[in-house]
Length: 247
Image (cartoon, rainbow, N blue to C red; front, side, top):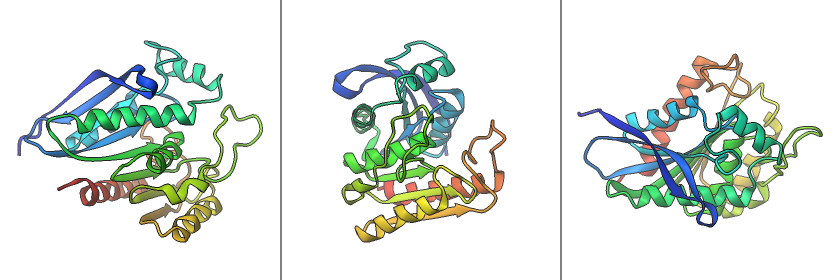
């Protein structure tokens, strides 16, 4: 199989038609293929997130990561842009949904698309992936330790993100959740509350919690990285997307 891929910066129309930056990676093989919208974490539109986007392309999907911080600091380094967004309380939920809608539409309009699009996010992006899947018509969603789907941020934390578990009935697609047993945001009891809401609303989901792992166990460039949990998590992600985004 020809396994080359191409990655590049593109411009997409996000919330309210705003032109924003995004990172696109796609396999150089005959389509049709499914698409994945990658939602970056709170530290921003950084190289580790671009590596994740390329990993999906290497796995046979067209993947795109919209720069959610582009409006506040176009062209700025990820740390500086993230700081600018934190100063305003974070990415507004309505804007996030609009940007993901624009990214999903971009993927579906490619000639190589099979029409199916999933979303995945890590940390704040995990919450945003759940929000997008409750607000848009998607085919799969992956929440990697998304904080504040259940519960509110502690006082002093620079985010206005509030709980969105009440949106569970609107979830449009199967959900995969990957969590750490030693995480505080979300804590295991918050994961259990989300699971109860999914069950009560008859939603299709799979949750996996890893012992010995806390927040950020996928992050290969951080002390929180847990290779065993991350390896199993990646296996589950690709299996899940294979079932939801092919055909």
